[in-house]
Length: 419
Image (tube, rainbow, N blue to C red; front, side):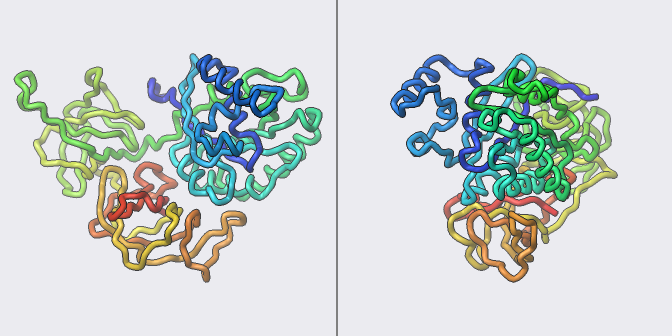
């Protein structure tokens, strides 16, 4: 089994309907794990008093924008960092409104785990299904359904079981590898950091314990070796006069000195001479390590090239089918050439064909409606000016994803998963 200090970082996203308590849950995690500063807490106390609340509104710890504080809602993706002795965390708190589907896609695109909150009083609703579908589409490896506000249903085991049964029936249609359930009260901290005394019938671990111990080492593709080159390191110093290495982030597989590799797109072959890091040379490199690879042969590599195993290569294609989420307020203009960015590579490309639009609530294909509006998820084909080195997203989230950038404004207008 591969161990690395870098594997201690868990990225997770929170999702749910409006007022299901996502921001409160994150505030509770930060507060009970002692991951906030005293001045932050004092600021939240003051705002809570101004609103006439009897309790400290922990949701304000994540609602950083002025409009969010005034409306009491989350309207953007709020990223938060905290750490415990066992693991480091990056949280993406995404809004629950349907018009912010793109925000959830953004927050979930790099997540190892998704927390989906359900109000125990309301059960599984349309937004719950929508967020579960997006988590499944994005191939998030782990999903925890948090049945929140258990304090408002008298911590009823029967109510909890009904919600779990309802969601389990729906989730059976989706592709979710690891699905867990948890009854919580974010407001009062039940089963968030510490196990609840109000729900003795729940024998499982708390949310934080799940987050600290869930196994994410096998989430990465450790079979198909992929190393997109980001830059070339040439110090030209007296100490290293002839040093040449190719720096980047391992996107798949395990690389070791002595491995026979092929450089794409040129097709030249070589062997790995050494793998260097800031702390010295290492005997192996695997995702998501950032390293510099030295080859035995002196080839002219540059940004966008890829080092792979000779007998295990990605596809090279100019016609790419992918599921696209349109992120921009304006629909795409006909025959517009966009910048297509995939791993470290950039080419120009156009949206050549729209196959269908997906009904995000039912997974039905809308083949007659091919208009593109913000938050729409569609299957399209793009044609690029040069071949891209791609894997299916299901196989590798790094080499199987891409974004479209408007060359006039340099805004990211779409993100996609290669099929």
